[in-house]
Length: 84
Image (cartoon, rainbow, N blue to C red; front, side, top):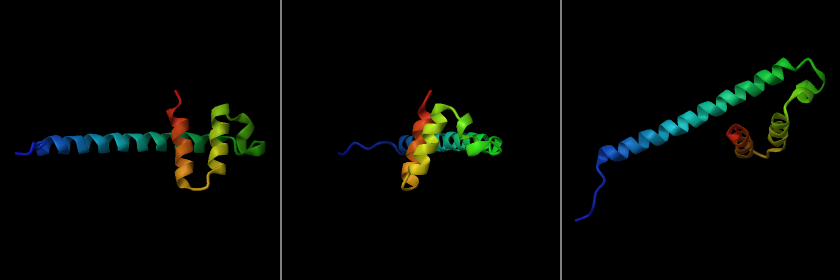
């Protein structure tokens, strides 16, 4: 007889994974909003606020500009978000 995993356990694991994924996406959206607000606030400055950005923001901004596709852009954002 095969060992079977009870269905509620699998459902709970799926729900937990989806919850973690949603939380991660919400964190990314929050960081994007901060970056957008930062760029908007400094849009009156030379270089659209680039000179006022932190080193981390400048690096992320450069990586996003150099990204060849959305996957690379997302990777740059996730790396920025993951920094303490």
